[in-house]
Length: 193
Picture 1 (cartoon, one colour):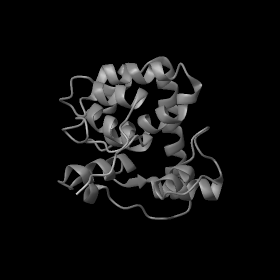
Picture 2 (cartoon, one colour):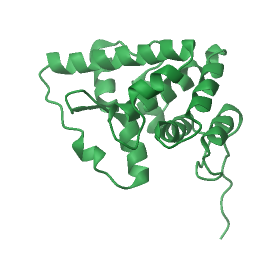
Picture 3 (cartoon, rainbow, N blue to C red):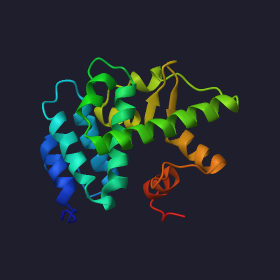
Picture 4 (cartoon, rainbow, N blue to C red):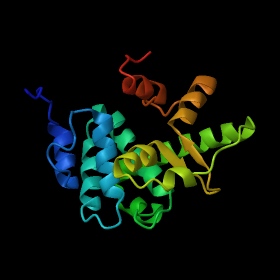
């Protein structure tokens, strides 16, 4: 049986995967969203030795304005992971000091967006679910998907990409230069609106 040719990550993606220690072939394509998830998942691990180097590389990427969307996707995944308060993952207090000045601005922008989503959900009286169900997942691939796509609030409730899409559709206020609607469409293999 012939194995179809797979695209391999290159450039910034390959550099970040190398720094993070992601094994060759474990990321099957150059999909930015997958690279961001994989690298953020490694960087968030308490026992990962290259977190500072990954965040330094992210800061360097921001020297090119074209990299903003990629960096925001990475930082959002990382924020979601550290929000869960798991012992195996670094905390917000451990990550925040490692951010460069431009990354810190992006970090705060993402934080502000998710605070607005949480406020919007609360104002509309839509009850949120507990994050305990997703945090109990043992399969690492499911952890990667669920823990990066959702964040745990201080109340123990979760918000996810679905909430972000609903918020953007209702209010029309995405993160400047980064829309969850466009991300959702890319995941589904459709073009952006």
